Image (cartoon, rainbow, N blue to C red; front, side, top):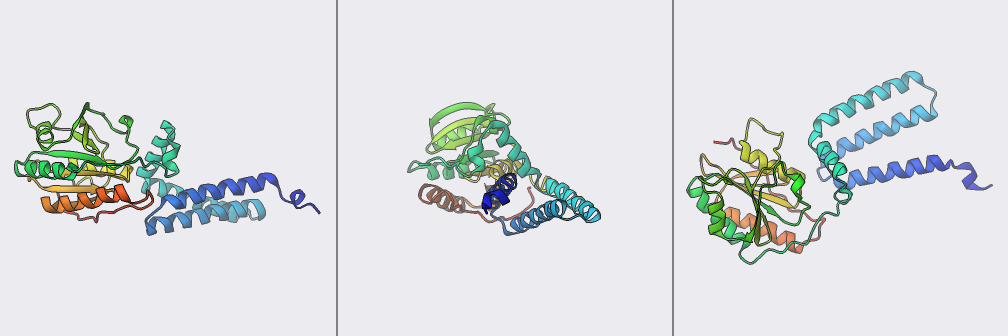
Amino acid sequence: MNPLAVVNPRLLLDVLFASSIGFLLFSRVNEARTLWLLRGYLFLVALAWFVQRYANLPLTTKLVDALVLACSLSLAILWQGELRRLMELLGTGRLAVLLGNTQREFRSGSGTVTHITEAAGRLSQQRRGALIVLDLGSDLRPEDFLNPGVTVDALLSRELMINLFAADTPLHDGAVLVRGNRIESAGVILPLSRDSVSRYGTRHLAALGITERFDRCICIVVSEETGTLSLANQGKLERPITSSRLEELLRELVNSAESLPPARRTVVSSSTESLS
C-alpha cells in the first residue's frame, strides 16, 4: 500500500506550516515566563483543532473554543507592544526582522565611547536634558521614528554632541542618533513605551520604546531636572548611574556588538526608581 495514498496532503501541509510558525515563535522568545505562556496557548490551540476535527463532542468543542478566544484576548492585551511591532514589520515588508536576520556589521571608532561618555557627563553636570541613541547594528530606518529629525552626518565629537543639546537650539528636545563614530541625525522623535507611564518621564519612555523594538540599540538619557544618567537596553532601564558606570556599560555593549555572533545578546539589568 502506498503511504502517500493514506496521508492527506493538505493535512500534511497544514501541520508543516503550523510547525514552522511555532518554531519561529519559540526561536524569537528569550524570557522563560513568556515561553511558558506561549507553550500553553499553542497547546490550547492544538487541542481545539484536534477536538474539532476528530472528536464529535459539540459541547467540549464550544468550551475549548471559548477558552482559546479568552486566552487570545488576554495575550493581545499582554503583548500589545509586540503585536504592534509585528504589524509594523509586516506593513513595511521587513520579513528579515521576523526571521532574526537583522544585524548589520557594527564598527565603532576608537573614541566613540569616550566622546559619548564625556558629553553625557558634561550634560549631566549642566542639567541639560539629552537623549542619545546608539545603533549597534540594528535595522533602524527613518519610518521607525515618529519624526526622523534632521540629517547631520558628522564625525562624532564631545563638543558637537553638547552643542546639539543646547537649550536655545531647535533640536535639543529630540534624540541624537549615533552609528559607529558618526552622528547620523538630531532632533529625532522616538516612539514611546506604554509601560510604567506614571513612573518615568517622556525621555525615559522614549528610550524604553526604541530599545523595546530593537535589540541592538541602546539609549542614554540625561534628566533635565536632576541631571541623572540612565541607560536603556532591550526595554530595561538602569538608573541612576555614574559617568564611570556608563562608560563601563557602553564598552561592554560595544565590544559585544563587535565580537559576538548575532544570537548572543547583552542584557543590562533593570533598576527602577521614580523620575525626579
